[in-house]
Image (cartoon, rainbow, N blue to C red):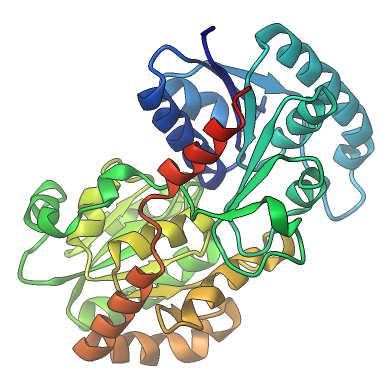
Length: 363
């Protein structure tokens, strides 16, 4: 049997990159001899993150459409043509068995080119409300791995498989790592820990909220571990001088910080939601309203509707944050209920299930 080859594309944010890497890692563990090539957008974070994970990557000159008339938009047709041409060239040279897309700008032209060249394609859709790229690609894709129910209105039903989102395997068992986490991050084991997650780049409104509410949070007796994102670290690092506060740009040991956390405040990007389902901590979701099709609110609502988390919109923070947080912190029963319900929504075998679908398509 000749050596298997896979092209994987996903990028723009950690939410597209990490699932792509998780799928590649799982394929590699099944087929140690296989060859992998990633394709990303040449100016996005995947160009650093993918080589760090040990894979080769090629960049396309591509970006999304802005919502207003800009020079970027005028260049879009040119970038698209250039990316389609380069995608065909990459595919012809590498000759993959299957092409896998996890979202992000580059996966559009790449999967489009693969479809036109009759190479099997798999889409992995992380959100409860798909973006326009995946909706367009779904017509020709061979399989669509989804993380939420009721996506028939976007995708052909016969191609959809409910797998869940790939998550880091080290999160599968954080319960017994609690003391290790408290030690690693030098936390006070007698205090409850509030973990604030702003996503890989950071979340402006969440950071503003925590800065404004810090005295209130500390007065309520918690210690605050605050991941503000690399774009905002300079603005907020001075809070490190406060007792019981740690501000970081990025968290290297996610499994250990989840293990140490008692309550979580997070954006509702797809991969964060999937991770939080797995670790089962009481969570307040503050979805970003500035993302395509408002999918973060829809992700958070899918959990909150099943009583698995608290959903606070940005517009509600000034009026409702303090009372909601105080009530959650004081009510152990409510915390347990949220924990148990969000865990029911976890799909711990997602990566393996997605890889099973990919294997079915190998010619």
